[in-house]
Length: 285
Ligand code: C2E
Ligand code: MG
Ligand code: MG
Ligand code: MG
Image 1 (tube, rainbow, N blue to C red):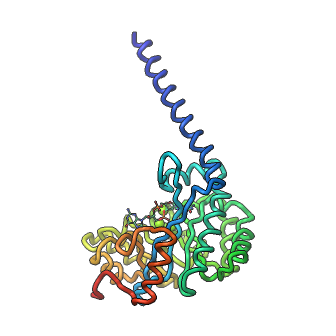
Image 2 (tube, helix red, strand yellow):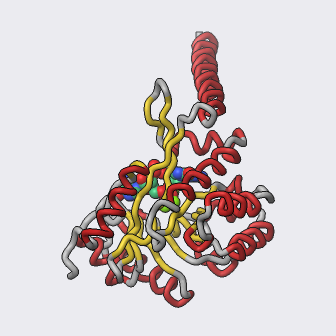
Image 3 (cartoon, rainbow, N blue to C red):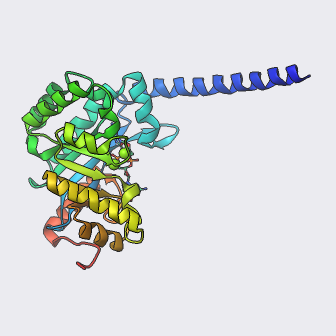
């Protein structure tokens, strides 16, 4: 009896797994066709410089408009595209689209693009970036590449070399989601960075939690002494904005300012801000 039950459970799991495998394979095939079918779209989220109170940069965030499923979040298809190698063509597409959009903005506004660890393993990445800058006419100093700590755990020497080559082009490098990895601080010494993006798990609540505030302050002063900028991700309220400003962060990014919006909307927003001044949602103090 117990045996039978066991087999039944096993069969159930097998069917379950089959179904999941099939669903995954289906999504994989659809992902493969999605570039060709123009189902990807870039959204942009502005980043505010806390000194000038101006928008200085917009981060490009990819969206998949699936014909049946609707909008699929990047957390659901970036990992799959990394496993299947599709991140190569997808990453290049994102980079090209982001640069194409950025040339339509003011000259003082930069664009940042997330780069997957898999792309960092590809020796042709530097050439790809260089080609896309040439093609689109975007100045290299208006492009920032965001790299997460988990990218840096393998292939250290290769990655250091690659990052130096990218910086030689004039492109800037930021460390994304800082503080969530295993050896955040040692990475800062090993790899050439221009900016630290403090993960929102430290920023959210930093106005009420002394611990979070102390950590944000520590990272901001680390950034200052290394001569790099620090962006606080996840600033939700004016109180949090004040607290990260007091901590010494140089930039903020979060829904307080704007959610990620379409390329048309970001162009409008940037144009509005240019003509109507910099409507910051909070009082200065
Ligand atoms: P990320 O690079 O850390 O991007 C910031 C994420 O935080 C975005 O989520 C953004 O919508 C979200 N965010 C911003 N402000 C707020 C806020 O106030 N509250 C909350 N809850 N979230 C906020 P999104 O667009 O879903 O992207 C998730 C992650 O997917 C990104 O994290 C990035 O790691 C990855 N990703 C997105 N686009 C690309 C891409 O083109 N290439 C690669 N390789 N990865 C990408
Ligand atoms: Mg990012
Ligand atoms: Mg981040
Ligand atoms: Mg992230």
